[in-house]
Image 1 (cartoon, rainbow, N blue to C red):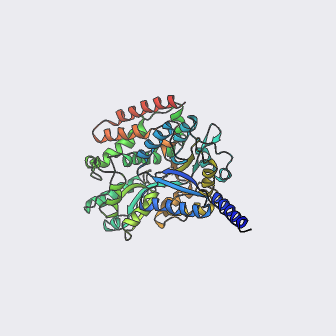
Image 2: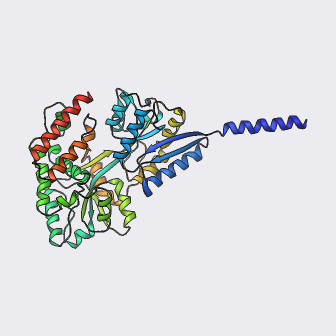
Length: 415
């Protein structure tokens, strides 16, 4: 009898051990640092409490470009993680066609996505990624510095120039653009195009794709000329900008109150708040339209998640995406990220600093980040290279001709 009790006890222990055997889920992403990295840590801890049989190993990589290179190499080498993050649609399309991604069409969260998020997640009539956020992109404006200069928050191109003149006259640097990576320049050029070209030609993307429009045209020449004019007027220092990073340097300079305005995404709001809790600032849609017009902002389909087609932990990976997309988690994630929701049934709480941009989103006064609307693998690299050339004196028409060539080459390959 004692022997039988011992055997039964061992059997119970073995069964318990089997039920608690953990699946290790490897996730790699570009959510990194004390804010986004900590947010992911909290999400993963909450997930593991709910699903104790799944252990999450999250690998954060600093910087999207570096992250993308690493993921591409791992996918090609067959050692990619179970789940990995993406950005926009183009990577997803290429990777799905290469057979790297698991088909997610039947997952329960798909029906909850807003139409634009579902479109961004679809390739060849199948869903391959879960878009987790829409970020806003606008101008961070230090309202105390504007007040010091006797200036008001600008709403159109003439008032923007007037505000920058007022700031300059008071010895305040009006604008900082990152030229080292050229993201700041790219965003400014697209802001100007959004408020001029896209205001009058909302189908411009389709015209560009079908060959009915070119970059080397009057509206884009105007955008690049405007950038040059702002530099010549002393609103920013073009040569100095070549050594300035659009993110880390921009955050530090803006947070310290050394510059009045920077182009930035909504993901930067909490970074600036953390850097300087006393700083008073607003995130506004770019004031680039004609006199009396309302400004047009920009939205960006941000982080997405995909599952490796070769994962041995497909069930656990699907469980993770189901949890991540749940209203409970998404509300936490969107609030922490300062982002707009890709789902119909949930929204986060946005920081008050984002109210001006949020109003533009509510009114439909936004365009989506331009390069992600074009069916090419990567237009950001040639665009940013061209804008660095612009800083160094290359004529706008030549820069735009180079963009046209890069676009045509990539469009042919993408098809």
